[in-house]
Image (cartoon, rainbow, N blue to C red; front, side, top):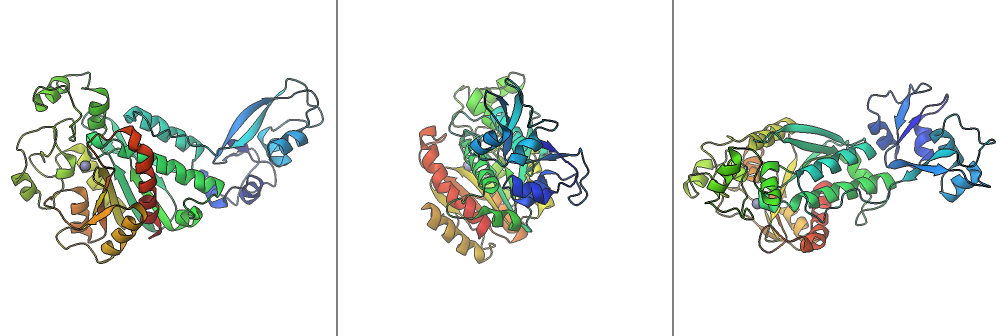
Length: 396
Ligand SMILES: [Zn+2]
């Protein structure tokens, strides 16, 4: 919520008043010089919303503050110009309310538009996060990246490279929401004080790498030609897209990376289809290009790509992974119960390319168990296991 600076106020005073980590307030107001506030300037306080309240018989500001567990000055700040001695019945005031609940409801049909709405709600309530587009899908959907944290350790998580593995998106979005709640309310997550993670790491997430594919699986073929007919053709005439992993051009985005791409192509289909076709050349698809460019720009210390299914974690590539990858995967396994798998007969994936080009830890995490798309009845269990991995990816 927004407040307006009075003479003599400081961000440090606001952090005391709202019981909010000072760094989160500073990062929520990036245009502001923290030591040079001037009266009338707008300051955003993260993790709060302003709730409307109407004055009733017998109310005093002090009593209202007390009953909402707020300091009196919070109410004065939120209601500039109010005269506490001349309240009248029916008068509208704003009462700041600390947000302690999730904005993201992940256990549902979670498509691109829902994700975009949730990201913009998170951005409004938690302005210390940074959101930007990393590129557009074939159908022109902007692919968002969400950044949280101030640290030098750059960690990357992505989800929904594969269309029918879309449940990975609400799982990751739920984690972002829980991390933000834990930061603003200074509550531990799995016993972990997250403010340290915020200071030490910068978490970059791309919660939906393949928005067109996810839309196809969840909402059916696009409204416009030629894609409407083409996807049915790629799908061998079937209108059941539950087996679809690729982007809208029938290219498997996780077979697009220049890491033994030719070997992967040799064992895979040579024409567009629901899965495993790696395109005519590496990085031919805009979604894969966007991920490659982002990865080069950000220079991550480690990456985790979330897929379904199998409850396994792939951590090797051609013995190019650093020794610490094994230490890390053992911790991921400990906190999730998932099985570490060093290598499989598969190349040209995002994590393969990352390990090959950076020689840093890269992982493919296969969430859940069953037939894709995994049913939402698994959501809570998947989230509980994934949460350990999300946190370990930051604290390790
Ligand atoms: Zn996958």
